Length: 227
Image 1: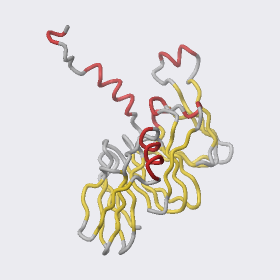
Image 2: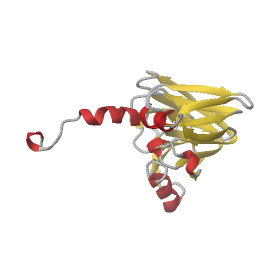
Image 3: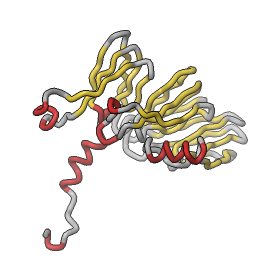
Image 4: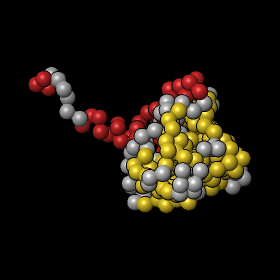
């Protein structure tokens, strides 16, 4: 499955080339364009309950699109927010992805929603992550640029919870406060996640929650005469 990513990292556009009979699963609403000869099928993958769990708990669309190439062609995809796209091929392994960062994957890759308990409280993202398992290419998106960090055995790395895109299941992690109570409340950092290798962690250079926290107070009020 050949691909190119243009206009990185701010306005990434993903082009995926499909051979005849090759299939690609995508997040609903991510398609920008495609060549003739691609059929699309919209399904609640994983059944009604699986799709409902992925939508309500994992922050993804209830429906997903599967494109099948009747002849060789290509499809272009883009995430809803300005940002980056990366490819990561999983090989009989598991990748955990934050809500909203799944863009596309080979049709053989299985998607599910995983509950990790209180330790996975990623800011406003909730307690659930998308769980990608199997073998095949996956494509992840972000708000802002994506930065990859490879951790050696026993190596530790601290990440603000609002900047996590994905991580390999081989890593272990613990969510904690950035410091004491004063630092947690007033430093602007809140919760952080400390990862321990081996494994890879993908970060995003911008936080959607931080942007909204900056933007919302600046929006005009709908109250007449400012009252």
